[in-house]
Amino acid sequence: MPRPGQVIVLCVIALLTLGIVMVTSAGLTIDARHAVSLKGMLTGRPVIYALCAVAMMFLASCVRIERLRGPLDGGTARRLVLTPATWIACLAIICLGLVYVEGFGREVNNARRWVYLGPASLRLSFQPSELAKWGMVLIIATWIVHLGRERMRRFLTGLVPALAVTMLVCALIVLEDLGTAVLIGAVALYLLLAGGARWWHIGVLFPLPAAGVVLAVLTSEYRRARILAFLDPYADPQGTGYHMIQSMVAVAEGKVTGRGLGHGVYKFGYLPEDTTDFLFAVICEELGVFGAALVIFLYVLLLLAGASIARRQTEPLARYVALGIIATIGTQAVMNLMVVTGLAPTKGIALPLLSSGGTGWILTAACLGLLVGMDRRAAARAVEAGVEQAATGSAGAPAVLSIGAPRALAAPAAS
Image 1 (cartoon, rainbow, N blue to C red):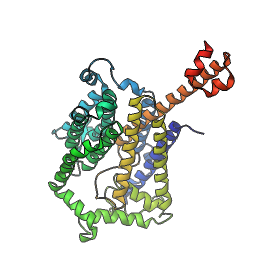
Image 2: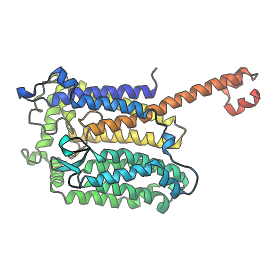
Image 3: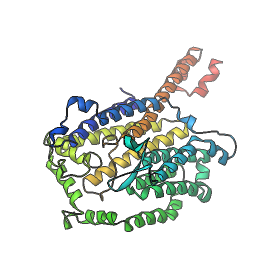
Image 4: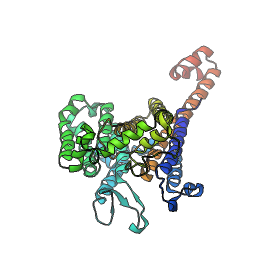
């Protein structure tokens, strides 16, 4: 029976492999100059990103999450300043600001969501919002651990500072990416509630972020158009409703068995963003219900394994980080599936480990690697406890007592 960490590794590899195949299929063109070959596929960017993601997953599994907690002595302010979470928060905020600086930020499809790595001529870039998304999990988890559940129940000194940082990060992101900002805010609220924050405290402050989301929609013409298209996509089928209609038709055309891998039609200029935000529609068209069920099954299995790891953690920071990771992946996957199937307005939110994107693949796999490391160390602790318990029983204590009793009861017999 595989351990939960091993299940996560298998799910990550399966999702990345499926992502490589489907991104390549969605990127097919009728131009003979861009024909797909096995050599080109194996040396293409998706394969390179997937290999980097797997490598980062195994490297991250070697990280002991308690080392990211920072010092436990001194005042709360001093401890938080010295913790790595604070450094990650500062780095994320700086990178989010660089998006809007000419020469650093990269614009794609009228959106500035990328920062260049090196000279612009190399076209190497990353998404700061991905760093902020995963960094906020560690930041909120660290805040909860350093304050403790009792202090988290306080309004001004427990909840407000955490929400202030969350709103600052979301405000920097929402200018270009409303979907990711909503995702970060939702996961932060979930972690704060899990950490001891009161429901009515969050209810008092909830109108502020809600007003921010409404303002972001009302001040953006294309966001207003997306809301109207969601309410009635057929009111403007060739304009604002085109994207949603094409996605739903592609999903429906796959039926049970699909058209066959590579035989999809809507990726040839009919379905926008087919390799990124709407890759699931291509999966449904080409692989049918079976392909869609496979994707959902892998995500459910991944989340169940992550939840199992989170329950077994004795270190508070590890438990909250694990909860944040599975909440982020689960929420992001649900948001994307709802958009693709027409259950939510169109927004730029990718399908984790499937939709094309180097930054998303690498950072998501790295965070899942933290879960793998947690599971491995939990298994090692269980083995050590079993060995110690067996040794205690052989030292003269009755076998029934030494096996079934807690360690605190068995220890005196060994002495």
